[in-house]
Amino acid sequence: MPSILIADDHPLFRAALTQAALVAAPQYAIREAETLDQAIATLESESIDLVLLDLHMPGNHGLAGLASLRAQFPEVAVAVCSGHDDPRIVRRALAHGASGFIPKRSGMDDIRRAIRALLDCEEWLPEALQEALARTAVDPADNALAQKLSALTAQQFRVLQLLAEGLLNKQIADRIGVQERTVKAHVTAIFEKLGVRNRTQASLLLRELELNEPALDGALNA
Image 1: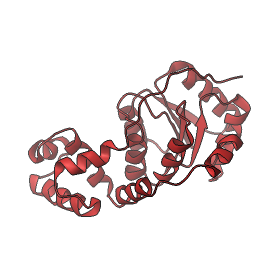
Image 2 (image 1 turned 30 degrees about the vertical axis):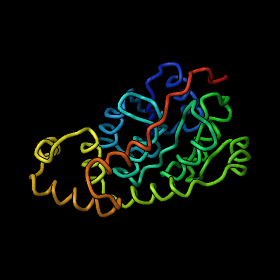
Image 3 (image 1 turned 90 degrees about the horizontal axis):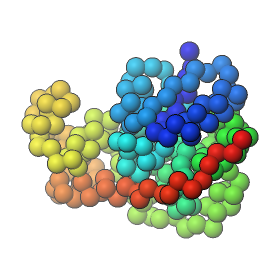
Image 4 (image 1 turned 180 degrees about the vertical axis):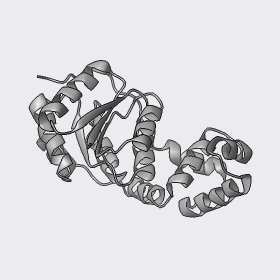
């Protein structure tokens, strides 16, 4: 059965998104996740067509979770649903593979329209954000970073995440269930694709995806 995954740790927003999805796509099953790890586990075990992803749920650090999902599940559409809707952040999210961006202060009609458009394989942004993006300059550095990260395989991206956590090769091998020499090969490939010389530089690149969490001053309107 086709499914939509709502990945958000705030029950109010999750419930509102669920209600919008049930109306917009009644033929779809709705799955929920409160952490990035739960979202990944659901994607690994079920057939998901669309993920609505909060940028600041537990386990997610800004755009890092988006980049991780796009690396591990490239066939699944991921739309960001966030209170962090600065046009520069929106542009970065699109550069890192988001299929759309739904501000958390959006009304229910807009959310339903967004879900229908995304399930039809269309990119979706509210009109106000489209206008704001037209006035926002592209950041060549962030686009370059997005291209570098998109060159990593799913396993290489996972190794990069564990490098950023400070794990040694043997610890990474134990965590992902491979031999240490396989991890070393991944690390070499990561350095080459990212254009870095060591673990510190690689980790710093990944941390460029982190964002400060915005104040939750918006609300989904019925």
